[in-house]
Amino acid sequence: MDAVGTYDAVIVGSGPNGLAAAIELAQNGRRVAVLEGRSTIGGGTRSAEITLPGFVHDLGSAIHPLGYASPFFRSLPLEDHGLEWIHPPVPLAHPFDGGTAAVLGRSIAATAAALGPDAAAYRRLMEPISDDAGRIADFFVGRPSFLRHPLALASSGIWSLRDARTLVESLFEGEMARGLFAGNAAHSFLRLDRPPSAMFGLMLGTLGHAFGWPFPKGGSQALADALASYLAALGGEIYTDAVVRSVEDVPRTRAVLFDVTPRQLLDIAGEHFTEGYRNGLKRYRYGPGIFKMDFALDGPVPWEAEGCRQAGTVHLGGTFDEVAAGEGAVSRGEHPERPFILLAQQSLFDRTRAPEGKHTVWAYCHVPNGSTFDMTERIEAQIERFAPGFRDLILAKRAAGTADLERWNPNLVGGDINGGYMDLKQLFARPMPRVDPYSTPAGGLYICSSSTPPGGGVHGMCGYLAARVALRYLE
Image (cartoon, rainbow, N blue to C red):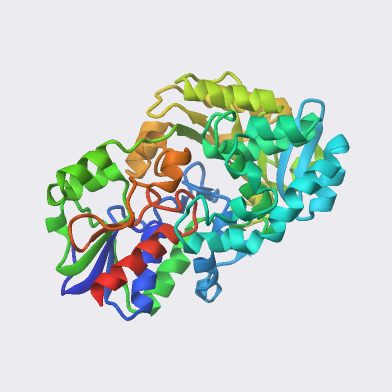
C-alpha cells in the first residue's frame, strides 16, 4: 500500500457509497483516502470486456434509476467529469406469451391507456405518488422511518407497506397491469405475498415515470470513474490493490468508514466492538442471491413484442402468478424452472458497448443465497420463450454464480446484491436497530455500505449519510 501521511478519514471500499462518503468529506475540507482491494475501482459499478473483444459488459449493476434520481449525485458536477446518461425511449417492458407486452413509459397516461380494463386504476394509483416523485428521491437524504417515508405520506401510500399480491388483487383485473407491477415488486427479492414488496413496485414505477431508468454511456464504470475524477479534483486520493484485513492495515487517520457488509466489518474490526454490537452484526441476515449472465450477440434480441425493442430493461416472467411462484420458490431454497429475469439491452441505445451490428445482453435471475446451481439453461430458455431465435444469435456468453460474484466483490455475500435482506425489519433498521446506524461503538469507525439506510441501490446515500455523521466527529 502506497498511501502515506495522516488523513482525516480513510474509506475502505470504492463502491458508489465509499466514493460518495469520500466526496462529501472532501467537499468539507477533509483530507481523505480511499482504499480499494481490487485493481479497478467501482465495486458494483464496474464494466469490462468479459466475453469477446469490443463487447463491454456491466459486471454488477447496469440500469440506474436511483443513481439518476439520487439527490446527492445530482448535486455533483459529474457530467463535467465524463458522465453521460442515456435514456432509452421506454424505461421498461414486460412481455407475455403471444407477443404482447406491458410497457412502462415516462407518461403515466400513455402507460395506463395500454393496460385495458386497469387504465383508470393504474392512474389512480400512480398519479398521486408520482406527484411526490421529488420527495421520494429526496427521501434518500434522510434516514428511513415509517412516519417520514414519502410513500407513506402519499395519498396512495396505504399500499406502500403492504404486499404486492394484496395490491394487485385489490386494484387490477387484467394480467397486463398485474404482471407489470409484479416485475417491479420482485426487485425486493421478497415473496410477493410479503410486505413491503408493494413498496418496491410503487417506487420503481414512480422512478420510471418521473426520472426514467437510464444508464451511463460506456458502462456503469463511467459512473465510478466520474465520481473518482471529481474526488481527485477535490484533493482526495484513491489506492487500488490495497487490501484491508484489519484496522491495522489502514494508514494513520482520525476516522475510518467501511463500505463493507457486517460480515466483512466483523472480520476487519470486530475486536474493537462491544459484545452486543458484535452479536448484532452476527445476526444480520443476507437475502437471496443472483445468477448472472452476459451475452455477446450477433444482432439485437428478436423480441416478439414490439414494445420490448424500445426498452432499456425487460422483465421476463409472464403473469403475476408466474413471477410470484418463482420468487416463492427461491424463498424456499428452490430453483424455479421458469425464473423471473431482469434483462438489460444497453447496446441498442449505446453504440459504445459492442462492435457495429453486434449487441450485448446483461441478465440475472434470483436464486437462494449461496446457490451452486447452474441456471444457464433456464435463463436462456426464458429469454427464448419471449424472443424465439435468441439462442441462434449467441456469439459468446459468461455465467456467474453466487460464489463467482462473491469472489469478484466480497460485499455480495452469497450472491446478495442488496447488502442484506430487505424485509420491513431490515429495511428500516440496518445493520441493527440503533439511533445512529452508521457509527459503531468504536470511536472513529463507521459503516457506510448498503447494509445501512436507505439500503441497496446505486444512489450513494448510505455513504453520504455516514460521512455526515463522521463530520460531526471530526469537528
